[in-house]
Length: 215
Image 1 (tube, rainbow, N blue to C red):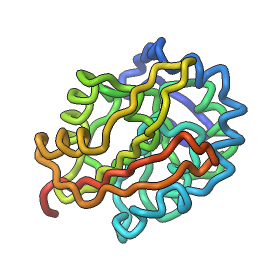
Image 2 (tube, one colour):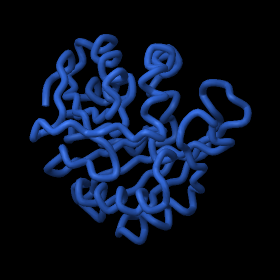
Image 3 (spheres, helix red, strand yellow):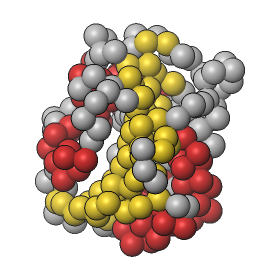
């Protein structure tokens, strides 16, 4: 793994093959997406769960980190951040935009996350869960629980609305994901709901805050 400004295929050096259903879109649109993603702040997007974030520095991972907005914000709060992003073009944009951020960039993807090890006090999945089908979501939740430290916080944002035709996406109900989390032993602290920050009237969001046991 390397600091922002470098790149690597994982702890073993293995390269992870992109998901042909979604990742080619993000590779093609990386520069345009950067303008959209970076036009809104971490605080605006995650307003409803800010009060639940750890108030002391923890080891944190932003899975599907995109252009690095959220990972950079978490690092600025003092957390030790790994940003996981499988799309090389997005990682390059992120490392350019946030060259000074104290973030480790890793090429990896759900549901396996084979390049991650150890435990994390905070795991963030922002606008990622909708790319996984039902079987992949079950496997991913199991893996996330493995990676989450006792007392740790898992935050998952869910996109609701018509899936686009140009990439693989599912409209996953919040209650379905909350039930899956409970089956895996997590407590549901909050299910927040909000409008789309990019002004798309047909899109709205849910954000699940989940806890693993007690510290």
